[in-house]
Image 1 (tube, one colour):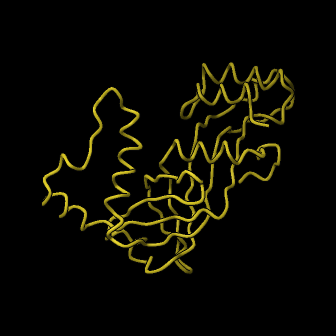
Image 2 (cartoon, one colour):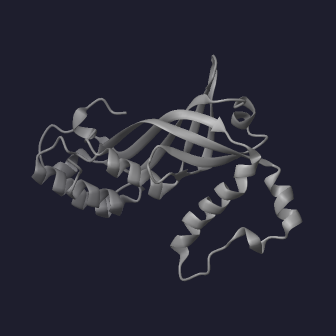
Length: 207
């Protein structure tokens, strides 16, 4: 996380809501002295925000390493873009990058295989609900034998969330007129991802 406290607002609920809405992140697990093991995973944050459900292919190195509970982190990347110093309209500025990032730190625990169907159903329902008016896809559309064969290849996990950290780097350290000017220019010329969303966040950053 960025060390400047201006970019780390006290908005845990908003950050958790963003993580729940995004539902996709980078799962990282340490592996001794070797480089961390990483896996891109969809997940579902529980209603109380204390945990998340996910699944991994059994051949995934993280799944193989997780014989019991292990320390892990899920990192989420939100909107981001390059910011030109010319956009502020004030002197002596430098190039930078604005972004939103959230880290969920906790422990990854394997669950009994019997819990896998429920996790898969909840995950698919969470994302399918956004596709209305399309009828939701459900597992009962699958051939039972095909579904059972595919499910044998994956393992269910619970990620217990022990800590949430976030960086909302939105030019909060600049005078308001400079920040708003940069937001307007970023909306038109930003280089990154979801620049229009990032510009809107810059216009009204969290406190």
